[in-house]
Every structure is written in structure tokens, then in C-alpha cells.
Image (cartoon, rainbow, N blue to C red):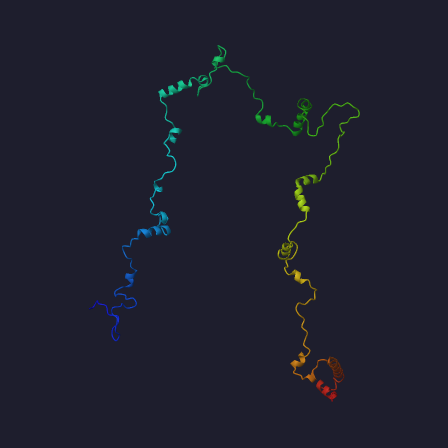
Length: 333
């Protein structure tokens, strides 16, 4: 058959246990990638038991998150109303712009207010009727009371008259003696005239003990500074030595260059750090591969004398030989 599946074992292999299913996964023919990626509709419905847990951890958009422990409880909060229900009252429009009263309502209102004396003598919107207290036969329309005010100077000239400072000061001093008697008005620093007629008395005399004071303001400065603050300034400040050593070593100080290793530089100018290595006594002999009997160490004086002799011979026989080597060979025989 064309649509029948082929057996798993075919050819030289024999299935000795056909009643047992073969290992692995057999994909039926005809399944494609498009069919695997296609969405299965309709979607399966999530069970109610599982839905209450998903609503707690992953609720749908716009849905209230409900704890799965009270998912099956009745929804009582949606029907509860807190507070006291307000009764409807007058509207704001009726309070701001009330309806006009009828003639009957106005008459009743006037009758209620007629018992007040202020309503009879000075009713609302009318001037006070004072005709009962005026003399009889007085013309209340054409009669005026008081003295007519004659305009003299303007208010500006009255408040700030056009006078010089000397004139203003002179006018202020004219009645000063009278103000002393009536109001005890003295100038600043003016002495009271007690009318002493004793020949031993003088207005320039000063009585009492002079108050000690300083014109540089030191007493005022002392009064502005509290005693506790002054004692704190004079007292010794107790600080941690470890903290001060750290600040002095690692924090910049005013007027000093920051040098964290300054304490390690207390050495003389020609000091050399490290260990002084003495030169090897036989370095030159070892480099030139000399045998011990030919070592030059310890023969410095002999070498110096030999060099001086050769130098003197060179100067003495410089003109007798063409080359210095010939002179050495001549004298070294």
C-alpha cells in the first residue's frame, strides 16, 4: 500500500520481538515546518484551578491581581460603600443669585423687621431722618452748618514748604524754651537747667565715677564672644596621634609640599641606597685568562714605576727611533 508505513527492520535484519515497540521516535510522513509553526485553533482552555494561580503571578492586562487564596471568595468589596450618604441641599446658583421675592413675601419680611429701631430710623438704602430733632421751621434743604473753608495754600506747600534748611532750623528753635517747660522736650545731650544760683556750681561740672571703657571696642567684642567658646579656643585640643600622623603624611598641608615618603629621606646628601659591592680583586686577571703566577693584583707600585720609566725613555729617545716600539725593544734587551 502506498500510504502504509514501512517496517523498522527490513532486509537482512530480523525483528525477533515484534510485539515490543522500537526505541526512538517515529515521525509520520507528511509533517512540515509550516504545519509545526502554525497556531492551533481554538486554543485550549486553562482549567479553573490553574487559572487562579496564573492570575496571581501573571494576570492579564487591565485585570486586578487576586491572590489565589481568596480567588474563590465572594466579591463583597465591590458592593460596599463607606461613609454617610449626603443629602441634596441648595445649589450654588440659588445661593449666589436667589430668586426674587414676591410682594407678599416682601411684606411679611418688612413686618418682621419693623420691630427694630434701626429699621425705623435708618432703614436699608435710605438716609437717616433727623427732622424730628431739628428746630421747627428750619429749611433742611438750603441750610448748611459749619464754617466755610477758605483755600490758602496747597497740601504740598503745607507739608514741604519752600524754605531753606537754615529757616526751618531757626523756626524750630524759636519755641524750644516753651516746649521745655510744657513738654520737657530737650535736645540730645542737652543738660537740664535746674536753676542753681550757687557760685560754686557750674554747668560744666561732671559728677560721679567715670565708667571704665575702651574706644577700640574690646569690651563689645568680649560680650559678643561666649565664655565657653573662649575656653574652647584656649584649651588644649586632644586628638588621636594616629589620625594626626596620617593627615600629616597623606593629606595636603597649607604651605607644605605633599611628600608621603619624606620620613624616609632623612639621609645625608651623599647617601647611596643599597649594599655597597666591593670590586673583585682578580676581575682583570680573570677576564684576560692569566695564570696565577702572572696575576697583576698586588703589583700596582711596580707597574707604576715601570710606566714612569717607559714614559721618560719615550720622551728622551723620541727623535732617535721612528717608532716607540723600537725604543722599547732597544732598552728592554
